[in-house]
Length: 161
Image (cartoon, rainbow, N blue to C red):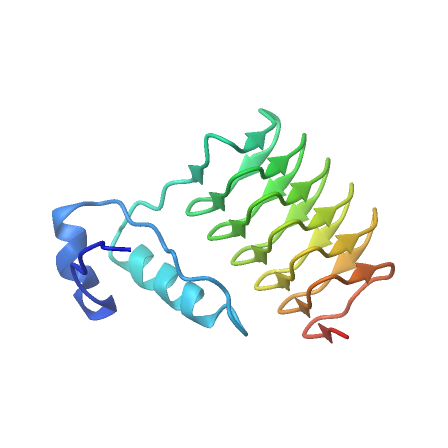
């Protein structure tokens, strides 16, 4: 895309001395380990990880977002939703009322999460997935694209067709 490369992960300590703010832009492909490692590394360097919200996203003033979380275009986060640190809420994801999303989660494009759902740390929800109200999803879960989640999901589960 024509952006200059100013450094690599190994240069973070030098770069943070130039600016205290950082943004983790690595997606969660296969697992959250890279995002989590970068988050821990930046925190150890005392970096500030701002919440980034697209001007085309909607967030209720009654919702809370953890540091380093990114809301992409068309994302909606409704009242009393609580989103952890270092999360990606991708384009057109709908996060309904009273949803709790743990730390280091990636909610993909067009996901619909109905009210009172809880999602554990490090989980990935694939594009177009629908999660009905009241569902509990464990930690480190991977739900593939287009799934309809009708029952609770235990820690570490992988759901795909």
